[in-house]
Length: 324
Image 1: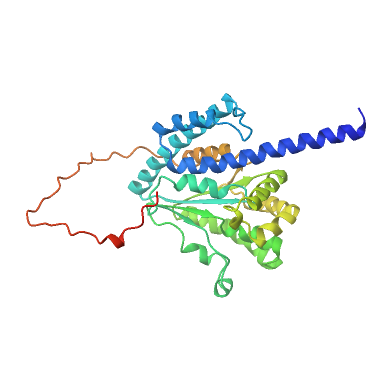
Image 2: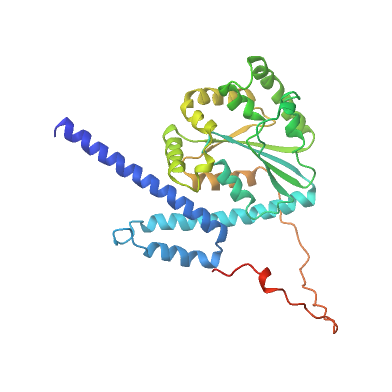
């Protein structure tokens, strides 16, 4: 076989592999919608319909039984873990625990997807997300950690930081938003800051989501071509793609200098989004000793009827048009 022919075959294989991965990304978007709506009774029916679907050429779906079985297992396990998260939430409230979870990683590493699954079934008054914007002029003049402190939990609360004070060790360092002295001061301060949090009774858990260079490239390309996801790409994200190696070095320094016994880092292998979600939630549950909180049976009170009550009609023009 000639070298020319061999290179041709390799190019075709690479294109097919990329097509398959793009297809998997689209399936993942479909899954995201399913997860918001799905309950256990409907799951089997929807997956069966998906298995019977045909592709654009009218041929039977190429998705194997094992793939569908994996998808079914993913849904069932996700729902089970979310049920455990509800138990954990009840335990946190009952025992006035204070929980902080940091989610860090490169752009498109899947942090947001995991946070969405953690909060999906929980009470937003108990479990909330802190995703801080770039600091204001005033905040830049404050003690570095000051703007994060107001977001820390009170007793009976869980706070998930979608990026955190570790911005200084990553994006600020790589993009030149802090100088060398500020960078070094961060590393001197952050272990003491986190030890103080732990001594105050806060349960602090830190996750780094790890993806490959190739996988980030694929996810960025998917966002570029998906109008529903283009908003996720900022100029800063695009620049971070160019500076992959600098971010890698910054990440290595960060993990080395801030991995302390009181608040260790946990690395999530995140190339496979579904496995990353399940592994992270399962690990999070394992980090807090909790039990099931007994609740008194809920009894629906009888509706009160008053003989003189007349329900006033609502004007027709106030109703939203029933298009569906």
